Image 1: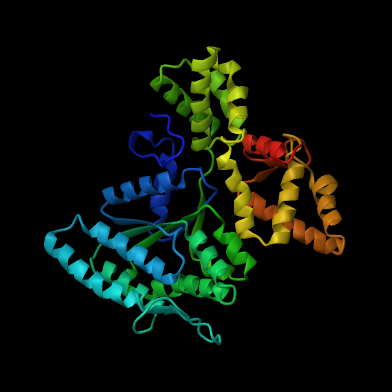
Image 2 (image 1 turned 135 degrees about the horizontal axis):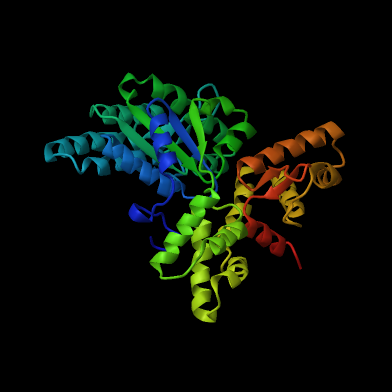
Length: 410
């Protein structure tokens, strides 16, 4: 097992998610899945492992990352290209027929538009040529795929980023376009009888659930089965660290491995890999036992130049929330970061919010706190710890808490 802290991992480097893979594949027999979570928790690695397992059971699999798409036409084009790539493994005659059909579809894509029914001046022309609503073209593409008489797993990565782009690039009609996109996915796609054997795995590093709730369209994703990748148990995390240590001829006893897991606190594989990577470097530089270098290995991740991963946690709040709510969320996180034990709502967090929003009634301030609290819980910034007998909101990832504290200290 290689020490890889960055790109997605595959094959023997994929570790410890066998139970989740089996559960997801079982869920896909009847449901589409929405897999959410912050960056660097292994969603892409997991999605590819799931595709591999599905392919072994006879599914045709397609992966498409739509983070760079800025229009509905871009989404359809990406999906069409992924379908063409998947077809390259089929017989030549099939590939030629597929490319011919796709060529006609791509010509249609050049002229599609994002019209929002019932809304005046809502048409957003995407390309040249004869105008056609994008949903017709997208549905035709799915029917072309479904005509292959196979079960399909379509893995669409970073869909929420694409939807936020629609909103940000089109202040007047962006929200309506997102609503229409999600309505198409929920209603039109499911209504296509030919697509009954298609299943979707949708993932994203910013919250689709937050987006739809904020804009009053939570109903549009109620057919998706929401899933998350939980952190490893301590036992699995220790096994992973010892497997890594064995590969690099490092002596790492179970007690030291548990100490490293405790220092991370939220043992997602990427963060274990990152701390282990720094530990390897410090071992060669200082020659001390691993147990004496764990604190230094974690501290190294917090320093400027090494802390790029943590900046995303701040940036995604700006991406999901308006300016006022972003500033409030940042303030709440800053208060919770003061101690590893976190902060209580009644004595610290709610009073902080009330001080910043004196115009709100007590009930309105409480509702605002609950709304932001739930976003921070869903997005794994913090968790509710009641082990002391009183509820405290603590950071899930201890290195992130320490970075947050350092970043907000003079």
